[in-house]
Amino acid sequence: MKKYLKLNTILLPLISTSVLTGCSQSVDDLYAYIDQAKSAYVGSVKPIPQFKPYESFTYSAAELRDPFEPAVDIEDETDKDDLLSPDKTRPRQPLEAFSLDSLRMVGVLEQGDNLWGLIEDPKQVVHRVKVGNYMGQNEGAITGISEGEIFLVEIIPDGVGGYIERDASIAIGNE
Image (cartoon, rainbow, N blue to C red; front, side):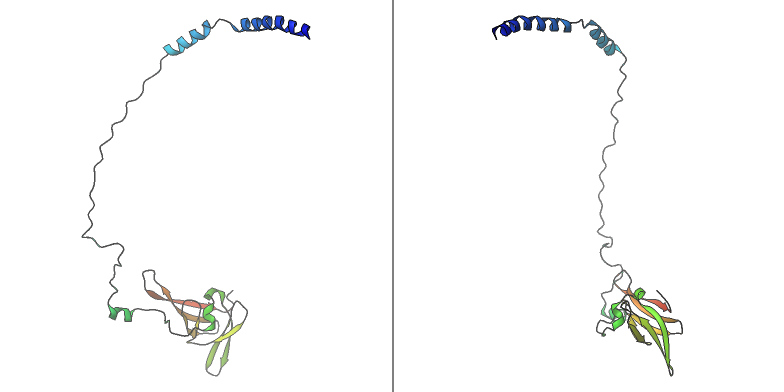
């Protein structure tokens, strides 16, 4: 073991000296390249642009109409009575539980002078309807029945707080 320690004490300084002397090359070419790069044309930086100063604006709209108030004055009680609206007190009929496009006309039934329409609901139950009955979810009142079509008038919201009437129909075989 002593031989190995003696050998290490002699070899270790010799090896480290030779390694360190191999790394000490001249770096003069590196300094020459750095000086050349520094002396090369760098260019110029554009000056900072000048901005216009902020001009403040005072908005006064006290004399204008409030945009959140309705443009039409509907507060008058006499006008409310004349407006179209669905009858909330009327008892609902079975076909008003379904949307109009889910109902299908499957035929007509003539009984004396009366013409009845035959409507199939999504549950495949056939209902007999006549003029004056309601169907669909928009207060659709049946106004006429022909051999191939049932005509309705629906009451739908107009988007500004009121209601409008819209004509609709269901043709036979409508799927």
